[in-house]
Image (cartoon, rainbow, N blue to C red; front, side):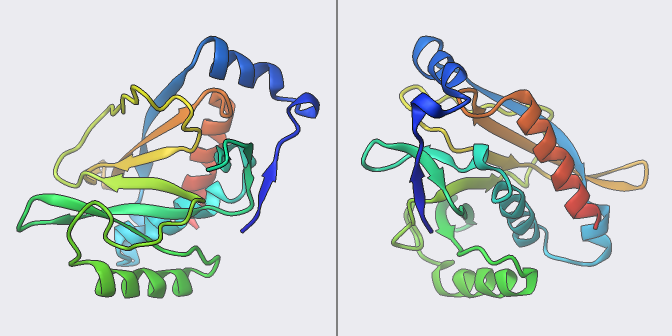
Length: 207
């Protein structure tokens, strides 16, 4: 993984970044319904499969890998890895795990299963230690269907990386549908970029 610092004076997005980061700090969210029928028909586990697809599309586009690093530098990670929540029924709390990305689905799935086996019972917010800086957050709320979801980041308007939240899947007209909320920072990501992401994600799911 590398982090390439952005030369803002030569950056075609400078005007937009300054407006939505400095003048009018702005994040926004969009909730969509994904058709996951193919995943269900193939009997694939939904969570790791969606982690793989989400990460695959993120790693295609720089607007989803743009961040401010620990040194306060604005730049682009060459690759992102998913940091995701798992639920503990006994304590009704969650922990964050992360899994290294691999473009090969079977290898990624095996790494996910290994992380669940090794760290899945660890309590506390960080279940797997040494979270890499090039991570993005995914969570799932599998207990209810939602049409809208929004995170309110009171003090984190410098957080540029997208956040994903999935809901409970359901059947509609014979198809399996999954709610997905995407929260992004307008300084680096416009509506066009989110819509392209959603379309490419659905194409991946459909195979």
